Length: 164
Image 1 (tube, rainbow, N blue to C red):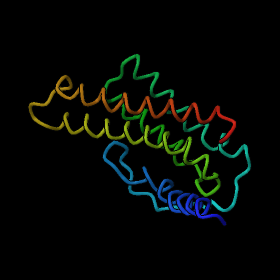
Image 2: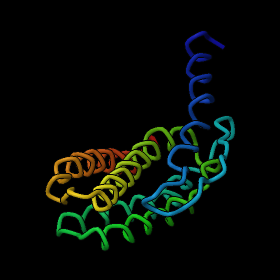
Image 3: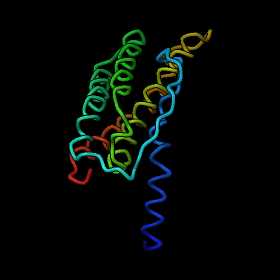
């Protein structure tokens, strides 16, 4: 094996388990305990359709949340929407996905989800803090939602790409 190919293979094998365990931690926004880690085998290629079959629901639920946010949501509406995305996220079996799918589509989608969770946690923390108003945390929420939207768009583009 050439040195460059070996380095790439090593990087993929090292990154895949880390990507599959991101976002599985417990948090106040979703009220769930940490998820036990799972591993990904980059050496076993997944069927070509596996990426779409596994990620379409998750990416679709992220897109639905983004659309809802564009119309405006209260915190009591936002929290169940984030929890709904969590259900789709948990349905994914990372070990059945190829490294390319994880890196190009799964990673950005998971980053989007994590940004939505961060926003829920920030919003919830504000609501429980005396003197904090939604208006005072709105800029922070908008930044998190903007980052989530950018990452979701990356994931959607990757899903349309024939290289996934």
